Image (cartoon, rainbow, N blue to C red; front, side):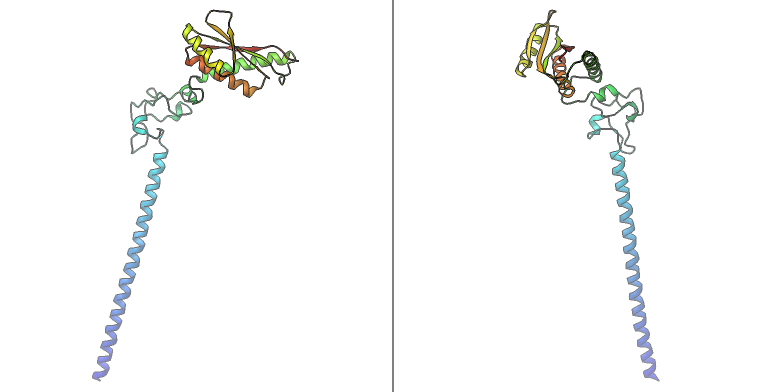
Length: 225
């Protein structure tokens, strides 16, 4: 009888030990799952914070661009975005005060590193000149593929700028002659009426003229059959 009681006590102790170990293992699993959920939650919050920062209207250096508030990632009141703002239109700039926001369509469209002195209005005016001259040539039966002299007219306000411009374009392979008016130049080259190459030449000549305080007035060509 005593041996039987002793055996039962031992078995009871073993069972209690096993139950205790199982309970501890279960607690460890629960703690591990809770930690994983916590880590996943923190990771989600970090991704959301990064997404909010990417949505900010300001450039890579917000302090220099327009002091974005970290909480909202929008512009603070009284913000004035710089001329380099990449907004596509006024509505794209999220400054709190629309009247204080300097993001304008013209300034954003003017950010052309190849022709920095040409504004959107300048390019629009050049495109209108091209359409008018090319349409006139086509009406008269011009064969665009034929090479012919193309003459551009550029005007300046002083002789120094005129001479500097003249030297620069001659070095680029253009021929320069004196225009009909004072401080005016004719810039010539031989080429077919290739719209892509033509616009590149015009943008170059017009951009350089503006850089040297001059103005590009337009171009003309004789009809080639």
